[in-house]
Amino acid sequence: MRYKLLAVAAVLALTTMGSAAEDGLAKGTPAMKSATALAFGPHGLLFVGDSQAATIFAIDTGDSKPAGDKAVDVNKLDGKIAAAIGVSEKEVRINDLKVNPASGVIYLAVTRGTGAGTPVIVKVARDGTIEPMALKDVMFSQVKLPNPAMGKGAATAITSMAFLDGRLFVAGLSSEEFASTLRAIPFPFKEADKGTGIQIFHGAHGRLETQAPIRTFTPYKIDKVDHIMASYTCTPLVKIPVSELKPGAKVKGVTIAELGNQNQPLDMIAYTKDGKDFLLSANTRHGVIKIPTEEFASATPINNRIATTAGPKYQKITELKDVVQLDKLDDARAVILTKTSDGFDLKTIPLP
Image 1 (tube, helix red, strand yellow):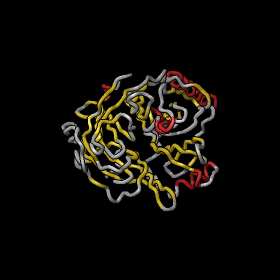
Image 2 (cartoon, helix red, strand yellow; image 1 turned 90 degrees about the horizontal axis):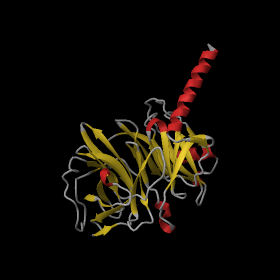
Image 3 (cartoon, helix red, strand yellow; image 1 turned 135 degrees about the horizontal axis):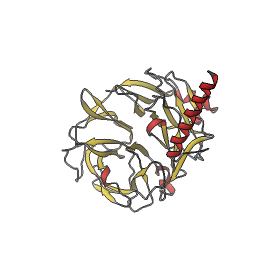
Image 4 (cartoon, rainbow, N blue to C red; image 1 turned 135 degrees about the vertical axis):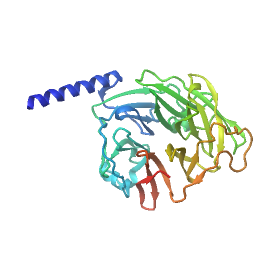
């Protein structure tokens, strides 16, 4: 019996290695300088955006077994992360949060230490257990961005990422004339092209813009056509057809809403409830807002200065306060990271 189990384990190991090889992954230790943004691909594949190195890493987490349906609620999360990685609470910065759809485990991109610090990927299990993800001798690959923003813009070389139909979509600033850039990078990685320069009309500013980065985005189908729904500072909501994202192209996104200026969008997800689709967006000034998507196809493009708000009407979810990150936990719930007077709390909520 023992030999039979060993044989089965060997076959499973070879199958995993073969799959990793097909994905271009090799065993090693990713030389990450920062962890700016996260995204998940199939079977627990984790993408880590590293703005400092202008590089994206694809890491096989080996985390593809469903972890149950328990709600996740952790008070003073930053303090517990600090204890898990051996630093003080003040030396923990949480940059991004994503739920692994293959398992339901929550992953956090964390900076450890002061100043530039060092990157750590932290896992939060469904029972609230917190542990750093091992990054030594893992199966991974990487791709370097050829034209990242430099100087003051370097921190926004990678702002948001999502995986869709075999490609990793990456927003950020480049060194091109149209600095606001969307890249569609095929996976397995070979190389990243210069991306697509994005121009938008910003109603609150009353002008065309090419230098402002997309702060957060989510893929969404409008009339069965794939789009990127992008949100910018101050806060235009823009739709960009995925089919127009071609290397070196310059594309004008369609601004369909102005959600209110003097505001920074922080995170955004799409979901379905009671047969209708919505975007849920966390913001610095406007809190969490719920935007019906039914008018996205027919919304009048905004091409003139807007003094207040315009576009599809949205609802403020007033009971959700100080939310800085969010992601879908399953079809009915989300997890949110909230800032409190004592630090940060992680909570599970019903999708509003």
